[in-house]
Image (spheres, rainbow, N blue to C red):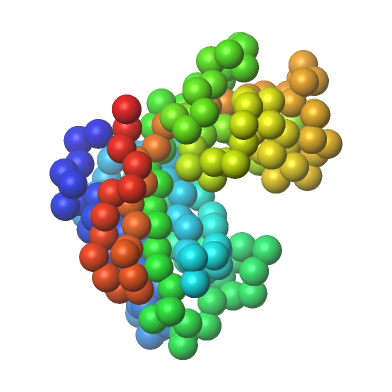
Length: 188
């Protein structure tokens, strides 16, 4: 990655600022980061997910992906009610910068804790970041968890038309609402 550590921390602050600007009916900032990465934005409240949306494929400039990901996580994640303005000072933002996406031929290519997993099948798609399946004791169990996220049967990953993609990510997170940003996962 060509971004500095301060740039990456700034992107987490950009995620928060994009929500603050939305609540104030203001336009998002003009982009500073034009690199393209897959991103995933998590919003947490009391150490529990409050919204989570991302764009695994690097389809847009980084600043736009972070801003759009944050707004989608805050307001469009179907698993949660839209974030309210009064909650903004109660939530923390976490950003995963995703790299090295590639489809695998064998599940033996997956390294637990290193690789995130995407499973796709005719319109169904599930994704888990590398740090999200800590309780998985095997690759098979991790794949079953991703299938479940995709609303597929847990053993569906065994089906040949199923596409399995892996990736790596760097993860940055606020230590408290509107607090310092720290790196919690480095690329290996």
